[in-house]
Length: 283
Image (cartoon, rainbow, N blue to C red):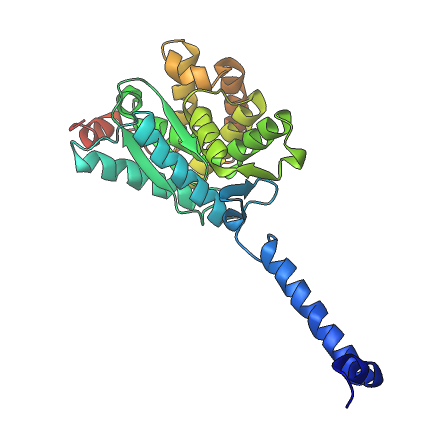
């Protein structure tokens, strides 16, 4: 009787088939052990129990997931309080925001607009469509077009993926190879800093202004509202906003130049101060 080894040596067909099966099993095992971005969501790349995020090729879904985590952290640890004393105010801000979002460069993101109960004149945004408007800024705006201009600017930061770019730059500066895979918890912490404390670059501000101006015009608002609010910033009475939105002077000149091009008709839409005060009277 032939031994199993002798039998395999004599039966080359069976031997080749067995070797092929073993190679296939090894390939499957390796594939399961080291998933690639094409096999799993970026947020599903987990090594040793630590969740990692890839900044080099982040999908909209992963961007929204990251923004959701940052939003939770802002509220839980940074004291960002959502205004809840008058639902009509929240509905009004969301109404303006969704109108602008539909005319933005990335209309398919699920935007979330929130009123923050804070008397400081400020607004900020984080990745994935999260925009925050403080009650102090709502009161400081003279009309809806001014408020919409600020909101369009914040949407511009999101459509330009400015927070993602800053995260990548800081990851590279920290020595992360290629900045492709970064710990999710580290990115969430950085995202909170970017939203509340760290100023945007001059290039990011100009880009958000350009995107915001076009979004405002496409949404049917009078684009001079954006300019008049920026001129208030130029006066230096809104230090909190300027801490993360620098260089108002040149930005006003750039906005005036865009307005002079006449791309959008300045019909006065959204500039009725009395109508605006009526809408925010419960604030």
